[in-house]
Every structure is written in structure tokens, then in C-alpha cells.
Amino acid sequence: MIEVPSNPLAWVNGSDAPEKTDINLGFMALSDCASVVVAATQGFAQPYGLTLNLKRQSSWANLRDKLVSGELDAAHSLYGLIYAVHLGIGGVASTDMAVLMGLNQNGQSINLSHGLQAMGVTSPDALDRHVHQTRPKLTFAQTFPTGTHAMWLYYWLASQGIHPLQDVDSVVVPPPQMVAHLQAGRIDGFCVGEPWSASAVQQNLGFTLATTQTIWPDHPEKVLGCTRAFVEQYPNTARALVMAILEASRFIEQSTENRRSTAQLLSAPDYLDAPLDCIEPRLLGDYADGLGHRWQDPHALRFHAGGEVNVPYLSDGMWFMTQFRRWGLLRDDPDYLGVARQVQQLDLYREAANAVGVTAQCPDLRSSQLIDGKVWDGSDPAGYARSFKLHALSDSSHRFAQR
Amino acid sequence: MLRILLINDTAKKVGRLKAALTEAGFEVIDESGLTIDLPERVETVRPDVILIDTESPSRDVLEQVVLVTRDQPRPIVMFTDEHDPGVMRQAIKSGVSAYIVEGIHAQRLQPILDVAMARFESDQALRAQLHARDQQLAERKRIELAKGLLMKMKSCNEEEAYTLMRRQAMSRQQKLIQVAEQIIAMSELLG
Image (cartoon, rainbow over all chains, first blue to last red; front, side):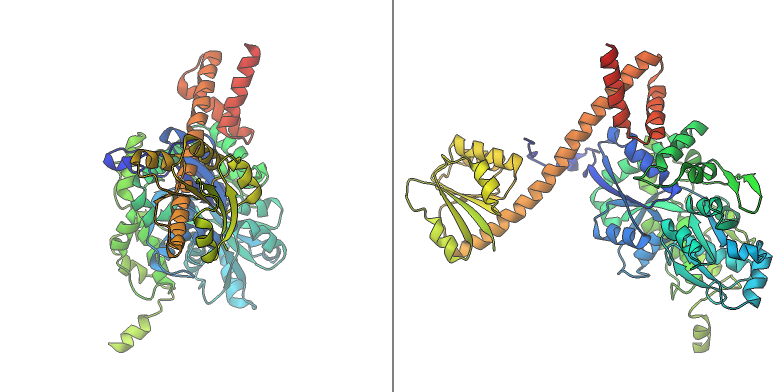
């Protein structure tokens, strides 16, 4: 029989062994869950004393609920989902959350239906004209009200002069069901992660109008998220988890062969349950838009890039709050920097990175230029949130009237 | 309603607990003496809690408790006259969730059972963790073994061996441990 140790709290006395060894790890069926699946199945966590149990979820809302209830210890999560829970936006009461590391950048895309293609709506300009001249409104799907896909879709539409909350309708559809909704004609377009966008192109149901890397090259996307209570209660487990996934991320990008075998693993029924030819090309940066263009994308989905991808930059976290503010999901300015400092576990990340030989000398903020020419560097979040021509700031007129 | 398997291991013909338990509203299945096969009785009766009333728990009693705890864990409460802390420790180590010395009052039974059940639940969680840890350690040893074999076969270094194994596992949609087992089996076959 198994002996229960006389002092289960032995680690308190200075050991860095994980406090909790059996971890339930949530993920959604998307190509960008690769580092989590590879870490769990290919022996990356065992050396640190962790067993990772993969738990596939059917929707982001489902994943969120289980993360908050503790049924999942940590999960492959949308950046915006973690911040929405932390700030109490959406269906649940606010719970303190944590971003342990970035899991990937880039690799999502905005697709339109074959029907729009047949009407000649195959460019941003044509879409702009169509939206402003034709009724009824087009319906676009994203994957979660505060998620990254909603924010990319809104940002991109707005950058083309289309107001995402007034000029079009939007609905939430879980990623694996996106293609079926498009096929059934319930939606005219969507923003989603791979392989579902490539899958629509492959089945000739739609085409890729824009990749999200054209909105923001090397944009933040999925993170390893958990509750703050989890990090506080099990700091050694959290650090070991980051170490294991960092090593898996590095492994995936070590060679083209590793990327190819990653695609093969992902296509299995337990993970993405999707054909290899929908997963592999875009995972290797080989894009075809369904309109006859094919290119090698310099900002395709990436998992590591020497650690650049994995740093939980404060400015990345703040950006999502600025967009929540811009679109009226937040009624007031939060303490952008203060909240980001609470959520982004930079210290823990640096310890983990250091331990596995990944550079830990990363800045807290980074600077990027987005599709509309604006520069985001985290220095004036409240000003940035107000700087957009198209917005839905819920209080602006109201507030000025009161003054 | 809680279903209780009551083991009377005292010299008295009618145990002191039966009346108190029935009075407190529990469903009691009564057994006399520990000459019975406890694991088998647990299997048939499927009680929520096991109560053992004993003057002093013998090695035989504790042996049976260990077996139940291993194969079909249940909260076990032991009522006894034995004050010896050594015996108490032995009993707890065997898997007893609560060890109550003397003084049985009907009104105290419910809280005692509540504590025993709570204690049992937290023990179970800990045991599950430890089991996972053991398994994880065993897997790690098998992977190490396979890596060593592969290094010899391919005359490559450790990192290369890991990469080969992982690539093989991933392209066949398997876990690393599965490929490790295949390598070990193959190497046994080829001797």
C-alpha cells in the first residue's frame, strides 16, 4: 500500500518539489494548443515530478467555468478570457486570475463565406462597400465575447472603417463548430484559430480575407492561464509547469521535422481530430487563401522563438484591457498597469526560463505597430483606449455632459 | 441515510454501539467478532462507513483494515478502550480515519462520523496524488531505460535519443511512454 507521508507539508522547509503533482490541464481543439499537448504526452513534465492530464473542452465558456471552479488546474486560454474573468466581465463573478506564460503568437484568421466570394466581396474595400450599401447586416462569428478572436475581428473591421458593433452583427461559436455554421449559412464570416480556417478553405466553403498577423505582427494569442489562488497555493507546481511547456515549445521549433510530427500528433482523435492536411501547411507557414494566392508567411503561428513568444509582457495584458474599454466592455478605466502586474506572473516566468536555459532578461513591456499605424507600447493605456475613431466607449458623452 | 457496517470485536455478546447507532437513526449491519473476512463483507454489504468496536485492536484487526483501505477504501472509525499511543498510531497508519477511546454517547456519534468522513476524503485525495507520483516515477524510469538502449543502438547522445523517440511517438500519435515500451520490448526480443 502507499504510505501517507508523516508530514505532507515537507516542501515548506525549502524544497522546490511541486506541491501538487497531478495536474488537470484544459485545452481547446486548436493548432495553437500544440505546446501543451506535446508537453503532456512527450515526457516533458515527468522530470519535474508532474503528471499532466489533458482535458479537452467543448467551448471557451466551458473551459472558463472549469478553470474558475478548480476542476481544471490550468489551461490553454485566450488572453482576453483570463482578463475578463479577472475583471468580472461576462457571465461570472470576478476571480483573481494569473497568466503564467504566453503559449503562442499569430496564426488566427478572418474568413468570409463562399457566398460573399461569389458576389465579388474578396477584398477589404469590397467588404467595406458591401457592409455600407447592403441590407441585411452580415453576421460574423468569433469564439468568446472578450476573447482574442472578437478583439482581432473588431480591430480589423474598425481599421477598414466598419463599426463592428453597429455595421455588422456578431455571434459566438465554439472553434470546432465554425465550419459547420459557415456551411449551414448561419454566418457570413468568422475569426478563428487553425485548423478551422484552413479547413473552411480546403472544403471550398470560404476564403481567408486577412490573417491576424497582418493586424499585429507577432501578436499575443493563447496563454497558460490559471487562478491566482493556484499560483499562490502551488508555486513550485506552477513554475515546473512553465518549465515543461517552455521546453516543449522549444522542441516543436527545433526543426521542420519536429513541426511536422507535431502536426501529426495534433491530428489524432484525442486532440484536434482533424485531417493532417488542414493542420500541417499553416503550422509550417504555408498559406493558401482560397482565392488563388499562396505564400510563405513570415509571421505564422509560433510557439517559442527563443522565448520571445512566451514572456507574459505587461503591455500584452494591458492591450486587451484597452480594447475592452474601447468597445464598452469596461465602463471605466481600470488600473491598467496595476492589474497587469497582478495577472502577468513575470517573476515566476523568469525563474522558470532561467532554469531551462531560456533567456530571462526580457523587458516588462514591448512596442508594436498595428495595422492602422498606431503604436502600442503600454505607456499610456487610458489615452490609447480613447484614441480610436471607431469605438463604443460607453461613458464618453455621458461624462462630458456631467462636467 | 448512512449505511454502517458494525464489527463487534469485544467479549460482550451484544455490543455497546448497536443501540446508540440505531437510536441515532443509522442503518446498521451488525457483525460479531473479527473472525469474519472483512474485505469480503465490505464487498457484499457496501457500507458508507465501517465501525469497529474493539477492546484492543490486535494485529489481525489492523491487517484486515489495511486490506480494506487498499482495495475498497472506506472511512473506518475505531472505538476502543486501548489508551496506548503506540497502538493508536499503528491503527491510524493502517488506515483508520478516527480512533475514539471510550465514552460512547449517542449524541456524539454524528459529529464523530462527520469528522471521520472528512478525514477520509482528504486522505483519499492525498493517496491518489501519491499513486500518481509513483506511476509517474515508474514511467520516467522506463523512458530512461529506453533512451539508454536507443543511445547504444544508434550510437547517439542523450538529446538525440530523446528527439528520435519523441518524433516517432508524435508521428504515430502516441505517448512517449508507449514508444519507450516498444523499444524495450524490441530490445528484449533481439536480446
